[in-house]
Structure formats: C-alpha cells, structure tokens
Length: 68
Image 1: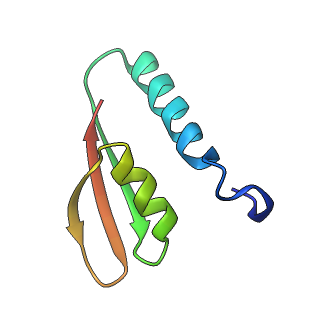
Image 2 (image 1 turned 180 degrees about the horizontal axis):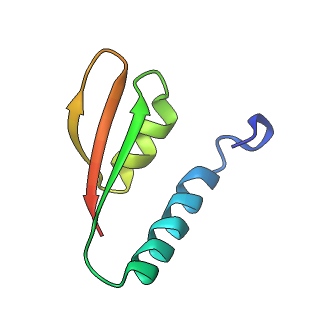
C-alpha cells in the first residue's frame, strides 16, 4: 500500500477481497500460504487478524497458512 494510504486498513480489505475471489474461483477448499518478512510488522498483524496460522519462522521470514 502506498505510504500515503497506510494505516487505513486497506491492506486487510484487499486481502479479504482477494481471498474471497480465490475461494470463488477455485470452488473447493484450498490452503493459502503467505510469506512475510519479520520486520513487516503491519503485514504480520494483518495475517494474524485474518486467522492465518503461523507455521514457520526463521530469522527473516514468517510463513502463515489458512484453509479457505
């Protein structure tokens, strides 16, 4: 999200819409995997708020998973 629009919840809204569209297009249960840099705190919070499960973490990357 452009720096002028950060903190407005737009990233979360985009992710919610994307997940809904993906679920609609696939038409069956699937697992979504997301990789986020540890220092991208805002993105980590978004995935956690959307009930993604932290499945792996190393020094640089957090890997999240969610069944949709």
